[in-house]
Length: 214
Image 1 (cartoon, rainbow, N blue to C red):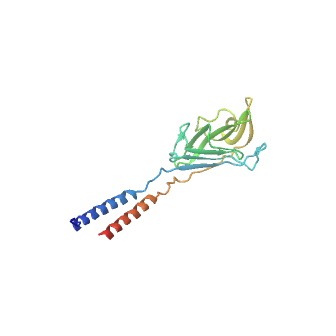
Image 2 (cartoon, one colour):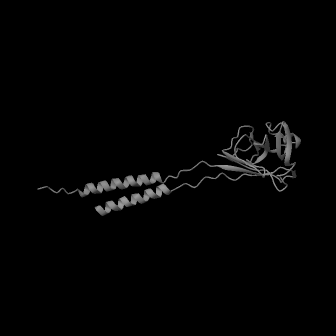
């Protein structure tokens, strides 16, 4: 005859208490939100072109956005040192998001951009087009384009210019009236609590099962 072994109630209660403490500890650690790095995007809107040849028109303008992992520091003069995580420059016809990029800026005491020179180029046919925006009448920046619209417009202009067979021709743009920048506050994505919620449900289910079996 086999002897029936009965479990010790005290041992069961001790095991249950240990399990409960372990589950509570797991919940505390799993509920710690994962905070992602803040990102900040600087958005530029140029003035409408004062003139242009087809396909450009006076209803178009240079627009751009540059996203960084953190805001550009106040009172900064950055020449060749800032590399955006992502960027986009449009001339109203083409939108460029990769390739060669010049991005030089100066900021004031509030961190707002007060002088800039950004530029990108892309191939078209046997030549290439260049999208340039410059606003540096005080010559805070030294790495501005040394040819093309930067010289023609005295360092205040948006311009689209084409280069073929060694000749540069401005296709659209405006001179003397800079565009504007919008600098939103850095945003942090909301932390996700999907995993903690699932863990909590499993924990309560285990506790309920243990109590039912007692």
